Length: 213
Image (cartoon, rainbow, N blue to C red; front, side):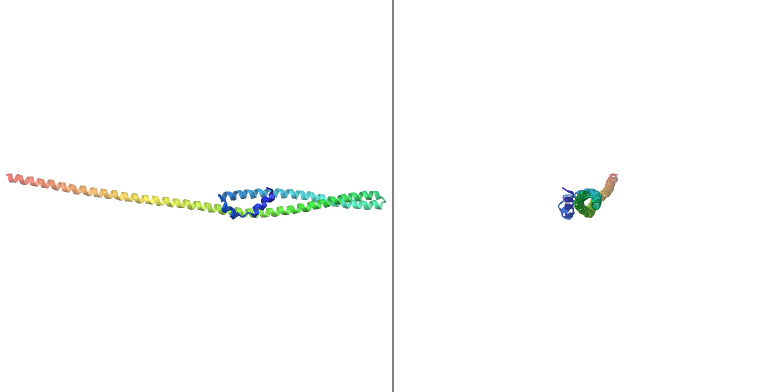
């Protein structure tokens, strides 16, 4: 694809529409930025070459203009000196340089138009590049914010899980304490009840012995 067709495609492209269709908008924008930067480099290189050619052609035009005037003056001089043959030769040279000047002028005008178009395209592309880079920056920022939000949500989820685990730990600890308290109380009463039973049995035995006396 020629550089001018690439410029047309890029400048007329609807960025938002392309982003809507892209599977990876960020990647698409990176590729577009690279394509635009490469195209701008190509355009500037082409424009520089055209400017160099234009300067060379300007020198050739100046020479052709100077030679045309020179041979015109020589033709006049030859006639003044009675040398019609030389005057005729001088007029032929004048015509050759005049024709060359006409051809150079046409080429120079075409080249000037191309240089102007290249400059306009460079300006358009650079403006478009600024717009696309801004869109890429915005998209990257939104992506980073989305990632941060996801991390925060994950952290919140982990915090909730940890809080639930702490609640379960507290419930289990309370259950253990209650169980220990209940067991200790049961043991104390069992001891008391056991002691009473022995004391009662001892008292019965004492009474039997007294009766036997």
